[in-house]
Length: 310
Image (cartoon, rainbow, N blue to C red; front, side, top):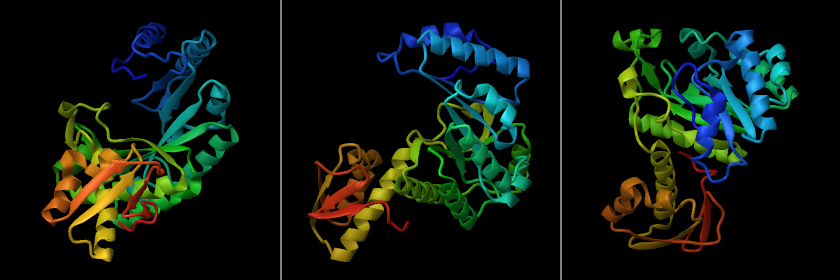
């Protein structure tokens, strides 16, 4: 169930109205996004807690989730919302202490680790929000962040491209030229790296991109694309196929069998992969078959994305 932009709404009426848009009304989730939920005044938190409990007891929602920052999480709020909120998305963005300090995030890598241990103690489902292309973050720094995330083992993750909101400290850095956003090619590489590592570790990626949360008129910069996930997955499968073609010295044609969920990425956004290999004189024939997601069969050889070196 999508969120709402206004600062204050009648949540119960909002849920009742939104329920009419969904066929499966027994599996709906209410999500609070757009801020640090646990930093709200205690009175407001208790108000939301009562509403969520009422909505669940009346069968209007099944689950509730919130997004917040590591520094806002403590035992008091977790005890308050234990059994009320099901999933907590933690906006860690990076686990590089230098990056976190210069961007004034208000927490360190150690703080994040302590927060995750606390969340696991209270049995919340945990999600990480990670940003691709943070200012002052090198490729090596990003790789280390992903490795640290794998160690912490969240249940799921979201990947966002960098966006710079107008009239913020980051906007000032950007306008004064203190940092330059990474190129789209590098953004896609980081997305590819994260996807491959998370998929291999069994960490579900529930979203790549930011289209529903921000408006262009509020921004100084964003790597905007209508299908960022599609671009990342297109590049992953192009690399996988290219490695096979080069290793086996394929010159004319290959047959690829894939899972139905992967076929769009094999073809590529705007048929990028089909056209890429066509320009090299190689015809790709694709068909769906009984094969695992993230796996393909090329001329009978089974390949997967997990060990791909991007």
